[in-house]
Structures are given as structure tokens and as C-alpha cells.
Length: 367
Length: 253
Image (cartoon, rainbow over all chains, first blue to last red):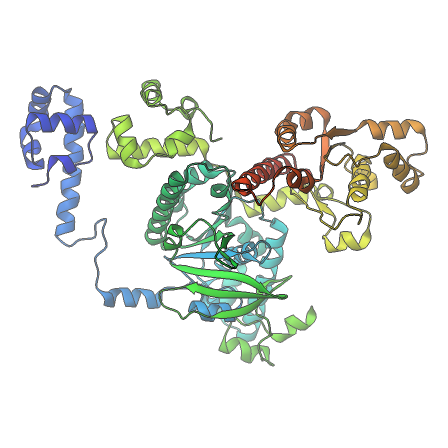
């Protein structure tokens, strides 16, 4: 109630007038009432009423916050957070080595960035995740939907069909091995058509469309509350060329990062971004570093770098708040993202009991 | 999309006038400002500005498609998804041929046959759909002056003797291949930008650019300062326009 007039979210002209008239706290405004306010400042009664409603809303929000209720700012103890994190699901990638170094898979409510040279498998992993997020809970997934924002045009529907078919087949094998009722029920809804119709695809041609789409995302996500994954494939592409004003670029990117963090937290979804690599020319040698500069490096919570080593694809966990930095090898098969060596599982039932994410051997040999 | 005038984004007339006083006339200008700046410029409260932002964003944002809709659209017209190259092993590796709707790049050391491949693909595109072609015109942008019309006729006559049995058919085919000789980066870019109308008017089904690297390497010496940025700028701009054309018209490039 003692809040200063200058901090209220009113129009600047109105604020200037209030300051000139001598109003200092919000309580004074509320006490004056709309008619008195309109006479003193010289605005219409409707405008005065609107302003008072804004003030009342703000003060109400303030009061609720100070009373410790659930307001816009989250306040909880670390124990509550721990419980929340432990029950939170991960989005598995079907490559158990990658899941292991990530601590279980792609985390919800965090931003994960995937950097790599062209052709190394970033879009493949994004498509794999868009399918994996829809795996029902009884199979170890989060049963969510996916939003795919494409800026480079590398999304191939046929490839997603292949990946989704392999995933459905894998789940069928698990269900046959374990023979539980809820597995069968879940499988009825986990079909190819369902998977494809729950991937929402947006094609953004330049950075303005990308910005506009991210502004509209909260609304979209509240309509489609089951979305658990937002993929932006190619966040570097629209910002790298044709940008003369680098400070504007940094500002827009930071704004984008903030909004994505808000989206990830409010809607409990994972945000996955793909970035390109650029060459940094040092004194004697040149190294490949993620594009978009140093300040962008702070935006993502978890950073994965994909690179080649002769003909083997490697993934390095470059930045993570809770896991150790390590490198693993992965493979991209016609079924999607997979481990390099098939796991040493002879009996499919035994294997799926231990770890339903590992692909049973017979599937591998059929290739 | 970005250059869309705010007037068309359904903002009120007085709001548009007010914004134009600060030189904000397109959606791009509007979305590049931060919330506080927008509040100052529009003179509205925080919540009002957020509503305006949503309105403007809705005007520029792309439409949503589910992956399922996209798959259905593709399966409705399966033959138009690829342009077969008639080299069976190549088609198998490419999963059907040169894909329509995206860019395909062919690179090799000199003399391996890139230009020959481009000429052959141009012939294939003019064939009717029943023979595996796209039944359309071809735009061929030549930067090395390596295109020879005689070779084109030779390939067509020898490869498909039963189809090109009469001179008339050959004339028809050669008439539908439009050749543009561009020798500088600027003219290549200008030509690519002007392609949209030509594609619609001439019913073009294939765009070939032979070659991008030669004209870029001639003009930009990467050892000079600043040239690298300009070169990548030019390439990226050309690439995004070509991608847009390929996707919009579902043709191979």
C-alpha cells in the first residue's frame, strides 16, 4: 500500500501527471477515488477508473506475495525443490549412453542447447525427442506433446515417421515381454497417427517470425497444456546473417532466452535449442566454438556439443549444473538415435526389465 | 512477413500514427523494441502493451501444422516428392531421387561431371510425369558459361530416343529450359530475388545454379579484411531466398 506511484505499471504520461500533481504512494490514489483523481489531474473519469483498477490489482498482488501465498515469484525451500526434481520426468533419447551423461535424459523446466557442425545429427536428435516425449508414462516417458519450431527447413516428415514407427515397435516389444494391463491400454493410444498429430510444427523464415512466435508461445501452451517439449531447430540461423547491428542482436537473443526460461518454468516443459558452430581464430590455431557469441552461452542450462572423430559421432556434455563433463559415442540408424554397441542383452524380457530404454538385440539383427 | 506494415496488423489508426512519429512502421520495428521502450512510445500501460505485442505477433507468426497434416499432404501426392535421377544406385541412396522442396548441393573437384549432371537433370525435369519427370520448365543460372545447348540436345536424343523422336519434341524441350548467364555476385542475387514471378508465369519445376562457388571465389578474397563477412552474408541471403522458393513451390533446387 505504501508503494510509490512511479513503480506502478501505468502509462508514462499518466505517471508524469501524477508525479506533477504530488501523488506519492498508491494508497493516496486509492483514497482519492476516480472522480477526485480525474478532477485533480485533468483526465476523464473512465481513464481514472482504469488507472485505479490497475493500481488495485498491483497492490492485491503485492499483498498476496508478502503473505507468502503463491504469487508471480516462487518461494519454496530446497527440500520441496528436491522432492519436485526427484519426481520430475526426463525425456529419454533412446541412446542410453547419452541419457546417462545427461543424468536420465533431457530435463524438464531446463533449457538444453545442442551445438554441432552441419550434418552431425542435431535435427535427428530433435526429431527423436519430439517422438520420445510422447511415450506413455508406464514405459518410462512423460506422455506429453511437442512443439517444433523450424528455422532452417530441415524437418523431414518421412524421417519422423520412421523414428516414430521404431519407437512404437519398441514399446510393443516391451509390452509383450511384461504383459501388464496398463501397458496394453497405453499402447492403444500410442499409434503413429497420434504421435504425428501431437507434434505441432511452425516454420519461421526470419528472426521476426521467430520472435513473434515465441511471444505467442505462452498462449499456445496454455491452450495445449500437455506440451512438454519445445524444440527450436536452428536458433542461430536467422540471427547470423544479415544482421548489421550486433548490439540489437544480443538484446533480442537475451530477451528470447528470458522468455524461454519463463516458458520452461511455467509450463514445466523442456526447451531444446540447436546452435551452429563457428570458427574462432586463435593465435596459432582455429577452434570450432558454438555460434552466437559468449553472452549466449549463459542462456542455456545444459550444453551438448556434437562432433566428429574420424567417422565416429561423439557427444560431449559441455556445460551442466549437476553432471560431470564427459564424452560418449552415438549412432544414427534408420530407426533414429541409438547407442554404438548394442547392449549385452540376450533375452529381451530380461533386458527390458532392467532398463526399458535399451533396445533388445533381435531388433538390431533384423537390420 | 517482417516488413508487414502495422496498419495491416489490425492496430488502431491513431496508434499507427503515433508509432510512425517514432519511425516505427513495420512489424519488424515494433518487435525489436523492449517492453519499456514500447510503453514509452505508445504511452500505454504494461498490460495494454502486452496485448498489443500479442496482436502484432499474431500478424507475423507462422501458421501451425501438425506433423500428421504434413504427412497426409505428402502422401496425397507421392510422385511429386522426388525427381528421379534415373541412376538407380543414386536414387536408392537418396531415398528416391533429388528431393522436391529442398536444396541439394553437388560438389566435386573439377572435371567430375557436375555440369553434365545438371544438364541431364534439366532434361529429366522437362519429361512428362509418366516418364518420371516433372513436366515443367527449368531455370538454369549459369555462372561459368559452361552450358552448351548442343550437348543438351545430344543427351536428350541419345538418352530418350523413343520420346524425342521428332525435332518438334526437341524444340519443345529446349524452349522450356531458360538459361541466364550471370557473371557477378550481385547479378546472381538479383536474379534469384526476381525468380518468384518467373516461376509462376513459366511454370518452372526445377532451378539449377551452376555454380555458386565459382562466382563467389572470383569476387571475394577471404584474406582481405571484411570480405569474409560480406561473402557469408551474400551466401546466406541467397540460400534463404532459394530455400523459400524451394519450399513455397515444392520444387527441387
